[in-house]
Image (tube, rainbow, N blue to C red; front, side, top):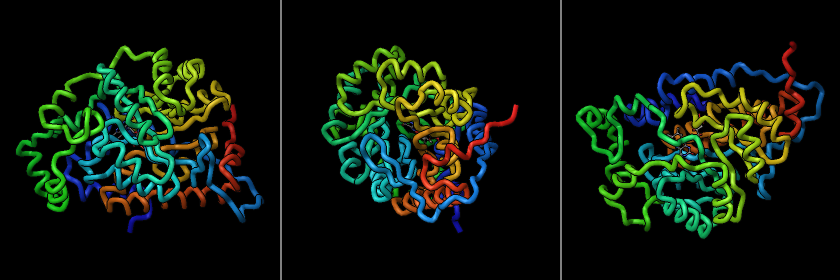
Length: 377
Ligand code: FNR
Protein backbone atom coordinates (compact mmCIF):
# COMPACT_ATOMS: atom_id res chain seq x y z
CA UNK A 1 0.00 0.00 0.00
CA UNK A 2 1.45 3.37 -0.97
CA UNK A 3 0.21 5.99 1.48
CA UNK A 4 2.89 8.64 1.20
CA UNK A 5 5.94 9.81 -0.72
CA UNK A 6 8.22 7.59 1.35
CA UNK A 7 6.27 4.55 0.11
CA UNK A 8 6.75 5.74 -3.46
CA UNK A 9 10.47 6.15 -2.80
CA UNK A 10 10.74 2.57 -1.52
CA UNK A 11 8.85 1.32 -4.57
CA UNK A 12 11.18 3.31 -6.88
CA UNK A 13 14.15 1.71 -5.18
CA UNK A 14 12.72 -1.72 -6.07
CA UNK A 15 11.71 -0.83 -9.64
CA UNK A 16 14.71 1.16 -10.89
CA UNK A 17 18.25 -0.04 -11.59
CA UNK A 18 20.50 0.99 -8.69
CA UNK A 19 22.37 3.62 -10.69
CA UNK A 20 19.11 5.33 -11.76
CA UNK A 21 17.70 5.27 -8.23
CA UNK A 22 20.96 6.73 -6.89
CA UNK A 23 21.00 9.41 -9.61
CA UNK A 24 17.60 10.59 -8.36
CA UNK A 25 17.83 9.94 -4.63
CA UNK A 26 21.49 10.71 -4.06
CA UNK A 27 23.18 13.93 -3.02
CA UNK A 28 26.63 15.51 -3.09
CA UNK A 29 29.65 14.22 -1.17
CA UNK A 30 28.63 12.93 2.28
CA UNK A 31 24.95 13.74 1.65
CA UNK A 32 24.89 15.91 4.77
CA UNK A 33 22.86 18.65 3.12
CA UNK A 34 20.48 16.04 1.74
CA UNK A 35 19.88 14.73 5.28
CA UNK A 36 19.81 18.24 6.82
CA UNK A 37 16.95 19.37 4.58
CA UNK A 38 14.62 16.67 5.80
CA UNK A 39 15.87 16.61 9.39
CA UNK A 40 15.24 20.35 9.84
CA UNK A 41 11.78 20.08 8.31
CA UNK A 42 10.98 17.16 10.60
CA UNK A 43 12.16 19.01 13.70
CA UNK A 44 10.00 22.05 13.01
CA UNK A 45 6.58 22.14 14.67
CA UNK A 46 3.37 24.11 14.15
CA UNK A 47 0.82 24.79 16.88
CA UNK A 48 -2.87 24.38 16.04
CA UNK A 49 -5.28 27.27 16.54
CA UNK A 50 -8.35 26.04 18.35
CA UNK A 51 -12.04 26.42 17.65
CA UNK A 52 -11.74 27.90 14.21
CA UNK A 53 -14.26 27.24 11.46
CA UNK A 54 -12.58 24.88 9.00
CA UNK A 55 -15.77 23.57 7.43
CA UNK A 56 -14.76 25.05 4.06
CA UNK A 57 -11.00 25.25 3.71
CA UNK A 58 -9.22 26.20 0.52
CA UNK A 59 -5.64 25.36 -0.41
CA UNK A 60 -5.64 27.46 -3.56
CA UNK A 61 -3.45 30.51 -4.19
CA UNK A 62 -2.84 33.00 -6.99
CA UNK A 63 0.64 33.49 -8.42
CA UNK A 64 1.49 35.92 -11.23
CA UNK A 65 -2.19 36.13 -12.15
CA UNK A 66 -2.71 32.33 -12.35
CA UNK A 67 -4.63 30.20 -9.89
CA UNK A 68 -2.91 27.14 -8.40
CA UNK A 69 -5.10 24.50 -6.76
CA UNK A 70 -2.55 24.20 -3.93
CA UNK A 71 0.56 26.15 -2.90
CA UNK A 72 3.06 23.75 -4.45
CA UNK A 73 4.28 22.50 -7.79
CA UNK A 74 6.81 20.40 -9.67
CA UNK A 75 10.51 21.39 -9.54
CA UNK A 76 12.73 21.02 -12.62
CA UNK A 77 14.39 17.61 -12.83
CA UNK A 78 16.86 17.03 -15.66
CA UNK A 79 17.50 13.75 -17.44
CA UNK A 80 14.16 12.41 -16.21
CA UNK A 81 13.89 9.99 -19.13
CA UNK A 82 16.25 7.61 -17.33
CA UNK A 83 13.41 7.17 -14.84
CA UNK A 84 10.65 6.95 -17.45
CA UNK A 85 10.87 7.82 -21.16
CA UNK A 86 8.79 10.91 -21.95
CA UNK A 87 8.82 11.73 -18.23
CA UNK A 88 8.64 15.50 -18.68
CA UNK A 89 5.49 15.27 -20.78
CA UNK A 90 3.87 12.76 -18.41
CA UNK A 91 4.63 14.80 -15.29
CA UNK A 92 3.65 18.11 -16.91
CA UNK A 93 0.33 16.61 -17.96
CA UNK A 94 -0.35 15.32 -14.45
CA UNK A 95 0.55 18.69 -12.91
CA UNK A 96 -1.64 20.57 -15.40
CA UNK A 97 -4.62 18.29 -14.74
CA UNK A 98 -4.16 18.84 -10.99
CA UNK A 99 -4.09 22.63 -11.49
CA UNK A 100 -0.50 22.80 -10.28
CA UNK A 101 2.54 24.49 -11.83
CA UNK A 102 5.30 22.68 -13.66
CA UNK A 103 8.88 23.85 -14.11
CA UNK A 104 10.67 22.32 -17.08
CA UNK A 105 14.43 21.75 -16.81
CA UNK A 106 16.89 23.06 -19.38
CA UNK A 107 18.27 19.50 -19.23
CA UNK A 108 14.92 17.92 -20.08
CA UNK A 109 14.66 15.09 -22.59
CA UNK A 110 11.42 16.21 -24.23
CA UNK A 111 11.20 19.20 -26.53
CA UNK A 112 9.98 22.18 -24.54
CA UNK A 113 7.23 22.78 -27.12
CA UNK A 114 5.80 19.28 -26.51
CA UNK A 115 5.84 19.77 -22.76
CA UNK A 116 4.10 23.14 -23.00
CA UNK A 117 1.43 21.56 -25.21
CA UNK A 118 0.85 18.75 -22.71
CA UNK A 119 0.62 21.08 -19.73
CA UNK A 120 -2.73 22.62 -19.02
CA UNK A 121 -1.59 24.61 -15.99
CA UNK A 122 1.06 27.23 -15.25
CA UNK A 123 4.27 26.19 -17.00
CA UNK A 124 7.63 27.81 -16.23
CA UNK A 125 10.98 27.32 -18.00
CA UNK A 126 14.15 26.72 -15.99
CA UNK A 127 17.37 28.09 -17.44
CA UNK A 128 20.99 27.10 -17.05
CA UNK A 129 23.29 29.65 -18.66
CA UNK A 130 26.27 27.99 -20.32
CA UNK A 131 29.41 29.59 -21.66
CA UNK A 132 27.84 29.69 -25.08
CA UNK A 133 25.11 32.25 -24.40
CA UNK A 134 23.64 31.40 -27.78
CA UNK A 135 22.11 28.32 -26.14
CA UNK A 136 20.34 30.41 -23.52
CA UNK A 137 19.14 32.83 -26.21
CA UNK A 138 17.74 29.94 -28.24
CA UNK A 139 15.93 28.45 -25.21
CA UNK A 140 14.51 31.86 -24.29
CA UNK A 141 13.20 32.41 -27.82
CA UNK A 142 11.66 28.96 -28.03
CA UNK A 143 10.17 29.11 -24.52
CA UNK A 144 8.60 32.51 -25.23
CA UNK A 145 7.10 31.29 -28.48
CA UNK A 146 5.83 28.10 -26.88
CA UNK A 147 4.01 30.13 -24.21
CA UNK A 148 5.99 29.44 -21.04
CA UNK A 149 4.80 31.93 -18.46
CA UNK A 150 7.86 32.53 -16.30
CA UNK A 151 11.60 32.02 -16.38
CA UNK A 152 13.50 30.33 -13.56
CA UNK A 153 17.22 31.06 -13.56
CA UNK A 154 19.07 28.38 -11.58
CA UNK A 155 22.15 29.87 -9.95
CA UNK A 156 23.52 27.08 -7.76
CA UNK A 157 25.28 25.05 -10.47
CA UNK A 158 28.44 26.96 -11.48
CA UNK A 159 29.88 23.44 -11.51
CA UNK A 160 28.16 20.12 -11.00
CA UNK A 161 28.06 18.85 -7.41
CA UNK A 162 30.36 15.95 -6.55
CA UNK A 163 27.89 13.07 -6.55
CA UNK A 164 30.01 10.17 -5.56
CA UNK A 165 27.34 7.53 -6.08
CA UNK A 166 27.09 8.45 -9.78
CA UNK A 167 30.88 8.28 -10.08
CA UNK A 168 31.11 4.91 -8.35
CA UNK A 169 28.40 3.51 -10.64
CA UNK A 170 30.24 4.87 -13.67
CA UNK A 171 27.04 6.74 -14.62
CA UNK A 172 27.98 9.60 -16.90
CA UNK A 173 26.93 10.98 -20.26
CA UNK A 174 26.94 10.08 -23.03
CA UNK A 175 25.72 6.84 -21.58
CA UNK A 176 28.09 3.94 -22.24
CA UNK A 177 27.26 1.24 -19.73
CA UNK A 178 30.05 -1.02 -18.53
CA UNK A 179 29.50 -4.58 -17.23
CA UNK A 180 28.35 -3.40 -13.80
CA UNK A 181 25.67 -1.08 -15.19
CA UNK A 182 24.59 -3.71 -17.72
CA UNK A 183 23.98 -6.16 -14.90
CA UNK A 184 22.16 -3.48 -12.92
CA UNK A 185 19.88 -2.87 -15.93
CA UNK A 186 19.35 -6.54 -16.67
CA UNK A 187 17.88 -6.97 -13.20
CA UNK A 188 15.07 -4.58 -14.17
CA UNK A 189 13.69 -6.05 -17.43
CA UNK A 190 10.56 -3.85 -17.49
CA UNK A 191 12.62 -0.70 -17.13
CA UNK A 192 15.12 -1.98 -19.71
CA UNK A 193 12.42 -2.80 -22.22
CA UNK A 194 10.94 0.70 -22.00
CA UNK A 195 14.34 2.32 -22.33
CA UNK A 196 15.30 0.13 -25.29
CA UNK A 197 12.16 1.17 -27.13
CA UNK A 198 12.72 4.85 -26.39
CA UNK A 199 16.46 4.98 -27.17
CA UNK A 200 19.09 6.95 -25.32
CA UNK A 201 17.81 10.15 -23.65
CA UNK A 202 18.88 13.34 -25.43
CA UNK A 203 19.06 16.91 -24.16
CA UNK A 204 16.80 18.07 -26.94
CA UNK A 205 16.43 21.65 -25.72
CA UNK A 206 20.15 22.23 -25.87
CA UNK A 207 20.27 21.27 -29.51
CA UNK A 208 19.83 23.98 -32.14
CA UNK A 209 16.93 22.12 -33.68
CA UNK A 210 14.94 19.19 -32.44
CA UNK A 211 16.11 15.90 -33.85
CA UNK A 212 19.53 17.22 -34.86
CA UNK A 213 21.17 15.32 -32.03
CA UNK A 214 23.77 12.66 -32.34
CA UNK A 215 25.95 10.99 -29.71
CA UNK A 216 28.90 13.19 -30.74
CA UNK A 217 26.88 16.38 -30.65
CA UNK A 218 25.58 15.46 -27.20
CA UNK A 219 29.10 14.76 -25.97
CA UNK A 220 30.30 18.10 -27.33
CA UNK A 221 27.44 19.86 -25.58
CA UNK A 222 28.09 18.18 -22.28
CA UNK A 223 31.76 19.08 -22.43
CA UNK A 224 30.85 22.77 -22.46
CA UNK A 225 30.71 24.38 -19.09
CA UNK A 226 28.32 26.59 -17.24
CA UNK A 227 29.01 30.28 -17.52
CA UNK A 228 30.81 30.99 -14.27
CA UNK A 229 31.05 34.68 -15.13
CA UNK A 230 27.28 35.03 -14.67
CA UNK A 231 26.53 37.81 -12.13
CA UNK A 232 23.53 39.74 -10.78
CA UNK A 233 23.90 42.39 -13.50
CA UNK A 234 23.08 39.68 -16.06
CA UNK A 235 19.51 39.70 -14.80
CA UNK A 236 19.16 42.83 -16.97
CA UNK A 237 20.22 40.75 -20.01
CA UNK A 238 17.56 38.16 -19.19
CA UNK A 239 15.00 40.90 -18.71
CA UNK A 240 15.72 42.24 -22.18
CA UNK A 241 15.01 38.77 -23.59
CA UNK A 242 12.03 37.79 -21.49
CA UNK A 243 8.78 39.71 -21.00
CA UNK A 244 7.31 37.59 -18.20
CA UNK A 245 8.36 37.09 -14.58
CA UNK A 246 11.98 36.13 -13.87
CA UNK A 247 12.67 34.03 -10.78
CA UNK A 248 16.04 33.07 -9.33
CA UNK A 249 16.38 29.54 -7.99
CA UNK A 250 19.13 28.50 -5.61
CA UNK A 251 19.35 31.49 -3.29
CA UNK A 252 20.29 30.70 0.34
CA UNK A 253 21.95 33.86 1.67
CA UNK A 254 19.79 36.75 2.95
CA UNK A 255 22.10 39.27 1.24
CA UNK A 256 21.41 37.56 -2.08
CA UNK A 257 17.71 38.06 -1.48
CA UNK A 258 18.55 41.77 -1.17
CA UNK A 259 20.51 41.61 -4.43
CA UNK A 260 17.59 39.94 -6.14
CA UNK A 261 15.29 42.77 -5.07
CA UNK A 262 17.83 45.36 -6.19
CA UNK A 263 18.03 43.74 -9.63
CA UNK A 264 14.29 43.58 -10.16
CA UNK A 265 13.84 39.82 -9.84
CA UNK A 266 10.14 38.87 -9.67
CA UNK A 267 10.40 35.84 -7.41
CA UNK A 268 12.85 33.64 -5.51
CA UNK A 269 13.11 29.92 -5.07
CA UNK A 270 15.08 29.21 -1.90
CA UNK A 271 16.85 25.98 -2.80
CA UNK A 272 20.03 23.99 -2.29
CA UNK A 273 19.21 21.78 -5.28
CA UNK A 274 17.92 19.07 -2.96
CA UNK A 275 21.38 18.61 -1.42
CA UNK A 276 22.96 17.77 -4.77
CA UNK A 277 25.37 20.69 -4.97
CA UNK A 278 27.12 22.26 -1.96
CA UNK A 279 27.18 19.67 0.82
CA UNK A 280 27.92 22.22 3.56
CA UNK A 281 24.92 24.37 2.58
CA UNK A 282 22.24 25.02 5.18
CA UNK A 283 18.82 23.44 4.92
CA UNK A 284 16.40 25.66 3.06
CA UNK A 285 13.82 25.79 5.84
CA UNK A 286 16.48 27.08 8.29
CA UNK A 287 17.34 30.12 6.12
CA UNK A 288 13.80 30.90 5.03
CA UNK A 289 12.87 33.21 7.96
CA UNK A 290 15.88 35.49 7.39
CA UNK A 291 15.17 35.66 3.67
CA UNK A 292 11.51 36.47 4.35
CA UNK A 293 12.58 39.30 6.65
CA UNK A 294 14.62 40.90 3.85
CA UNK A 295 12.07 40.33 1.09
CA UNK A 296 9.32 41.74 3.29
CA UNK A 297 6.50 40.56 0.99
CA UNK A 298 7.80 42.54 -2.01
CA UNK A 299 8.00 39.46 -4.24
CA UNK A 300 6.81 35.85 -3.86
CA UNK A 301 9.30 33.48 -2.25
CA UNK A 302 9.13 29.77 -2.98
CA UNK A 303 11.17 26.97 -1.48
CA UNK A 304 12.25 23.41 -2.25
CA UNK A 305 14.71 20.73 -1.06
CA UNK A 306 13.71 17.92 1.26
CA UNK A 307 9.94 18.42 0.96
CA UNK A 308 8.12 15.09 1.21
CA UNK A 309 4.83 15.86 2.98
CA UNK A 310 1.91 18.26 2.72
CA UNK A 311 2.81 19.31 6.26
CA UNK A 312 6.27 20.37 4.99
CA UNK A 313 4.48 22.81 2.68
CA UNK A 314 2.44 24.07 5.65
CA UNK A 315 5.67 24.69 7.58
CA UNK A 316 7.18 26.74 4.76
CA UNK A 317 3.99 28.75 4.37
CA UNK A 318 3.88 29.39 8.11
CA UNK A 319 7.31 31.03 7.70
CA UNK A 320 5.88 33.26 4.96
CA UNK A 321 6.72 31.36 1.76
CA UNK A 322 4.19 31.58 -1.06
CA UNK A 323 4.65 27.96 -2.09
CA UNK A 324 6.96 24.95 -2.30
CA UNK A 325 8.26 22.68 -5.05
CA UNK A 326 8.84 18.94 -5.10
CA UNK A 327 11.62 17.31 -7.11
CA UNK A 328 12.31 13.72 -6.11
CA UNK A 329 8.76 13.05 -4.90
CA UNK A 330 7.57 13.54 -8.47
CA UNK A 331 10.32 11.34 -9.92
CA UNK A 332 9.29 8.53 -7.56
CA UNK A 333 5.68 8.81 -8.74
CA UNK A 334 6.86 8.70 -12.33
CA UNK A 335 8.96 5.59 -11.66
CA UNK A 336 5.99 3.82 -10.16
CA UNK A 337 3.30 4.52 -12.69
CA UNK A 338 4.10 7.30 -15.18
CA UNK A 339 1.51 10.08 -15.39
CA UNK A 340 -0.85 8.27 -13.01
CA UNK A 341 1.94 7.85 -10.47
CA UNK A 342 2.67 11.60 -10.54
CA UNK A 343 -1.07 12.34 -10.25
CA UNK A 344 -1.30 10.08 -7.20
CA UNK A 345 1.70 11.73 -5.51
CA UNK A 346 0.27 15.21 -6.17
CA UNK A 347 -3.12 14.14 -4.86
CA UNK A 348 -1.61 12.58 -1.71
CA UNK A 349 0.31 15.79 -1.03
CA UNK A 350 -2.82 17.91 -1.50
CA UNK A 351 -4.78 15.69 0.88
CA UNK A 352 -1.98 15.83 3.43
CA UNK A 353 -1.89 19.62 3.22
CA UNK A 354 -5.68 19.88 3.53
CA UNK A 355 -5.72 17.59 6.56
CA UNK A 356 -2.82 19.46 8.17
CA UNK A 357 -4.53 22.81 7.58
CA UNK A 358 -7.76 21.50 9.07
CA UNK A 359 -5.95 20.18 12.14
CA UNK A 360 -4.17 23.51 12.47
CA UNK A 361 -7.38 25.51 12.19
CA UNK A 362 -6.17 27.24 9.03
CA UNK A 363 -8.95 27.96 6.55
CA UNK A 364 -6.56 29.16 3.82
CA UNK A 365 -2.80 29.19 3.22
CA UNK A 366 -2.45 32.71 4.64
CA UNK A 367 -3.80 31.54 8.03
CA UNK A 368 -0.82 29.20 8.48
CA UNK A 369 1.39 32.08 9.66
CA UNK A 370 -0.67 32.17 12.85
CA UNK A 371 0.43 28.63 13.75
CA UNK A 372 4.09 29.47 14.14
CA UNK A 373 5.05 29.98 17.76
CA UNK A 374 8.48 31.59 18.11
CA UNK A 375 10.76 29.49 20.30
CA UNK A 376 11.19 30.98 23.78
CA UNK A 377 14.59 32.59 24.40
C1 FNR B 1 17.30 18.25 -9.89
N1 FNR B 1 17.23 19.63 -9.74
C2 FNR B 1 17.37 20.45 -10.84
N2 FNR B 1 17.24 21.80 -10.71
C3 FNR B 1 17.33 22.61 -11.77
O1 FNR B 1 17.19 23.83 -11.63
N3 FNR B 1 17.57 22.08 -13.02
C4 FNR B 1 17.75 20.75 -13.22
O2 FNR B 1 17.95 20.30 -14.34
C5 FNR B 1 17.67 19.90 -12.09
N4 FNR B 1 17.87 18.55 -12.23
C6 FNR B 1 17.65 17.71 -11.14
C7 FNR B 1 17.75 16.33 -11.32
C8 FNR B 1 17.46 15.48 -10.25
C9 FNR B 1 17.54 13.99 -10.45
C10 FNR B 1 17.05 16.02 -9.01
C11 FNR B 1 16.68 15.14 -7.86
C12 FNR B 1 17.00 17.39 -8.83
C13 FNR B 1 16.90 20.21 -8.44
C14 FNR B 1 15.38 20.32 -8.27
O3 FNR B 1 14.84 21.28 -9.12
C15 FNR B 1 15.00 20.70 -6.84
O4 FNR B 1 15.70 21.85 -6.46
C16 FNR B 1 15.26 19.57 -5.85
O5 FNR B 1 14.95 18.32 -6.41
C17 FNR B 1 14.42 19.79 -4.61
O6 FNR B 1 14.67 18.82 -3.66
P1 FNR B 1 13.80 17.48 -3.46
O7 FNR B 1 12.35 17.88 -3.56
O8 FNR B 1 14.20 16.57 -4.54
O9 FNR B 1 14.23 17.03 -2.12
